[in-house]
Amino acid sequence: MSTSVVLPALGESVTEGTVTRWLKQVGDTVQEDEGLLEISTDKVDTEIPSPVSGVIEEILVQEDETVEVGAILAKIGDGSGAASSDDAPEAAPAEDAAEAAPAPAEPAAAEEAPAEEAPAEQPAPAPAPSGDSTEVKLPELGESVTEGTITRWLKAVGDDVAVDEPLLEISTDKVDTEIPSPVAGTLQEILVQEDETVAVGSALARIGSGAAAPAEAQPAPAIEDKPMQQPQPNEVQEAPAPAAEKPAEQPAPAAEKPAAPEEKPAAPAAPAAAPASSGDEVTYVTPLVRRLAQQQGVDLSTVTGSGVGGRIRKEDVLKAAEAAKAAPAAAAAPAQTTAAAAPIEVSPLRGTTQKMSRLRKVIAERAVASMQATAQLTTVVEVDVTKVAALRDRVKGEFQQKTGDKLSFLPFFALAAVEALKTYPIINSTVEGDEIVYPAHENVSIAVDTERGLLTPVVKDAGEKNIAQLAREIADLAARTRDNKLKPDELAGGTFTLTNTGSRGALFDTPIVFLPQSAILGLGAVVKKPGVVSVDGKDAISVRSYVYLALSYDHRIIDGADAARFLGAVKARLEAAQFEGDLGI
Image (cartoon, rainbow, N blue to C red; front, side, top):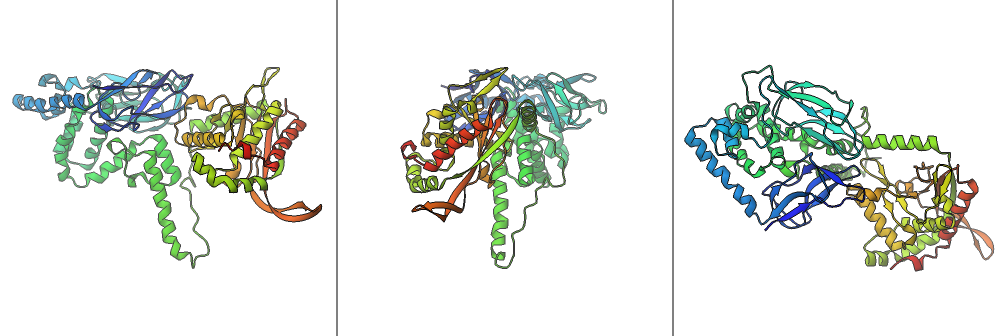
C-alpha cells in the first residue's frame, strides 16, 4: 500500500506551485517530515516534507513542471513498487547480449525490451533529427511571474547537451533557477544574452544535431559511450552530471540506476577524473547556493555536498563557512598574546561588480516609490528602560523554562507599541485615495535581515497577544524567514512595522515607511550610560539603560504632534515597566 504526496495549501492566494528540485529519487528511503522536494510559488520558495516514512516508489511531477494545489507529486510505500521496476534492467542487458546490440543502445535497452527501438524510447525527448532544431523557451515560473533575466549561460554554442541538463540560469523577482535542456543534441544558437530580460515563452536558444558533426546522428549515446572508450578527464566529468539529474526528471528514474555501474569500470583507467568530476558538480549548484558561497567566501570546489547525487546545499555552505572562520580563530588564539589586533576579514566582493538580485530590485523600486509618493520624516525619543532590563533579568530564566523561548527586549517594545496604536490609530492607518482607513486590528510587520534581502513577516492581531505569545511568534517567523520556509500570506497584511536596527549595535536610524503602511518604528540598541535620577527629592547620577525609538511616518496624514503623542505613550509604558501581568507565564 502506498501513500500519495500531494502539494499542500501554501497560502490563501496561492493556487499552484512549480517543482524546482527533487531532493530524493525513486528507490530512496525517506523518513517522516524529511524534505522531499523544493517548490516555488509566486510568493515563496519552500520544501515539501514526506508525510510518512518509507521508500519513494514513483515521482509523478518532474522538475520545472507547475501543478495545482492538491495535485499528487509522488507515491511512497514499503518499496515493493520501486523494487518491481528494478527487475527490468536485469532482463534487458541479457536481451541486448543475445541480439548483439551496439554498446550505446545498452542504457536505453534497460527501459524498453525491443533492442532496435531502444535509442528512440528514451524517457525524455530524443535528440533532434539532423538538420532540425528545437527551441528552448522560458517556461512559466509562477502565476505572477511574467519575465526573467538571464544571469549566466552554463553552455556555449557548439557544446553537446543531454536531456534535462542545465543550460542557463534565470532570475525573476520571486526565484532564481536553472533552465534544463528539453532535448539532447548540440547547442546551435544562443538567442538571448546574459543580463537580458525576456518574457515568459520567449525563445532562449536552439538545439539540434550540430552542423559541425553531421556524422554523429545521436549525440547523447555517443557522449555516454565515450568515457568507456576514451577515458579523458573532460569527458568523464560530463557524464555523471546528467546522470545525477535524470532520475528526478524522467518517468522511470529507477531504471537509470544500473547505468551508473556500467560507466564506473572506466574510472580506474583515469584516476585524475575524480577531482575533475567534483569540479563539474560545482557548476550545477543552484544560483542561491552559489551566491551564498560567494557572500561567505567559500570555495565550492572544497565543499562536499549532502544533497541528492552529492549536490551542494545551503547548509553545506554555511557549515564550510563556520569551519573556515573557526580555523583562523583557533590558529590566532596563541598569537593573541603578542598580536596587537586580530586580522580583518576581507570580503570576496571587494573589487568586483555584482548584478542586483530580483528581490533587491523589488526592494529598491518599493523604497523609491514610497519616498516619491509620501512625505516622510522621523521623530526620535530617548527612553529609560532600566526597569524593563531589571524585570527581564529577573524572569528570563523562568520564562525560557516555561515557554522554551529566550526573553529579549523586542516583545516588550512590541507590546508597548501595539497598545499605543490602539490609542492613536492614525499611526496604524493607511491612505486610499482621499480617504484614511483605520484598521480594526494591529498586524505588526517585523523586519528580518536575510541572505536574499530585507523581508517583513507579519504578526497578525498583535494587539491581542501577551509577551510570551509575541516572543514565540516573532522568533518563529524570523527563523522561518531566514530558512525560506514562510507561507506567502505570512508576508502580507501588515499595518505597522517594527525594525530592530539595534540588534547590530546602531543607536538609531531613520527607517523608510513602505506603502501602504503609514509608519515604522525603529528600535535602537539598549546601552548603559550615566543618567540623572531623583533620590530623596535631589538629583543624582546613576548608571541607567537607555534606548532610542525612531518613528518614521507619512506626514500627509500624520502630524508631528501625533507622532510625539504615540512615542510618549510608548515611552511611559516602558519606563513604568509594569509588565508582570502581561508575561503570559
